[in-house]
Image (cartoon, rainbow, N blue to C red; front, side, top):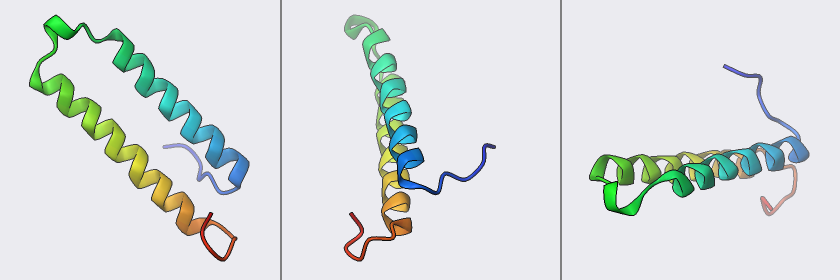
Amino acid sequence: MGKSVTNQQQQVQYMRQRLNMFLEVLDSIEPEHTDLEDIDRLISMVDDMDTKLQEFKGRSSLPDGK
């Protein structure tokens, strides 16, 4: 895997990249051909982003985690 993302600027960049990937996948889906597996994959991507965001918040050096 890649190296650990530790500073806030890298964390923001990482989250932007992940969000852009999600949006690309979402844009590529044709509603009339979407099945439950596609929806599950989108949900999984959102869950992964949320998990990473919570991890980054835990690493924050600010007292309130922002």
